[in-house]
Image 1 (tube, rainbow, N blue to C red):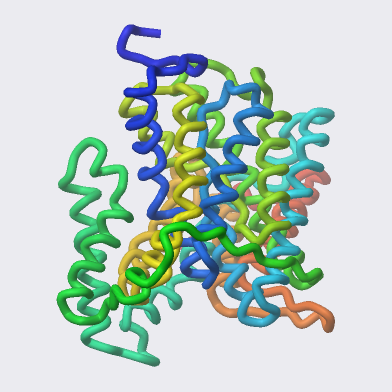
Image 2: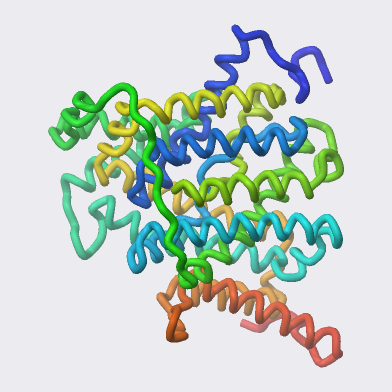
Length: 421
């Protein structure tokens, strides 16, 4: 480590620890509270268990993995489907099971390694599924923004587009810390315009108490929710492994070996399971915080613990919850226009960085089928449960990929030839 770095095991003095911790908190704050807002639940609950989950994760990883566990965007699309049909309690049962699947995966990884993940989810399948997650949410963003054909509204659209513009400017013009909190800046900018236009009432915020215990939500067992959410588990498992590799390269240690991927997956699994039991959404490591580490060269896990403690403290502020819940839909819509597109773009980026060659028939077929099934509204009615959207696209992708592997194994595959236009 050079003199301008703060290593993983260092504990900065309090005067430095506090601002560094707040910096990481704000880096993920806008995105992590957007998830519960979209799902219609109290963000204080999510912030509380993100903080608790982060502390659990750090402890299980022996304080060797600098990371913050924030709300996962991979669960938004399937959660909206579940909530619309079965309620949020049903979604919680799916969250609990995905947490347990992480614990099961940790045991499999400990025994067999991670090769099976690549077999089920090669880069072409994973990238396509991630793209579907973002694209499937596009109609929701358009509706919230007043840009949908079903409910066009010029005033709503004006606030949404202004929010979007402020967010984009934050990402492209600002430097340093301001550049890593574009969502938060966008929300502030959009809220300011909404207040000036009389579209944002401060009354509920003023009346809210300073101190309030975050509400808990009760899980309701639902096999439908579990089936719908399983693909999101695979997405976040691969995302976790990727983030761990990137974090290790920044810090300069092989974290897959020490403290070990086994511990990392267990930490996330316990955090997600606990969150589900008490009403919070599944969480994941955040690329925003990884970016802050790369910029600041501060790797101390004590800083991430500090961010978690601040998140827990803020979750008990009644005015905070009221302020977040009072944000008008147009502002959320404006942010969503960008964020949902970013999710889809990340899927494309994954395939580009992995060198996925779409001139190969196998890759072309997989991407085409996954995108069309995932974004077309296709549905299979199985009686007690429907499979649709991301779930159906994921199953189709896995099934086709395994079929192609089988055809190659038995020598009856000729799909490696260039596709003809």
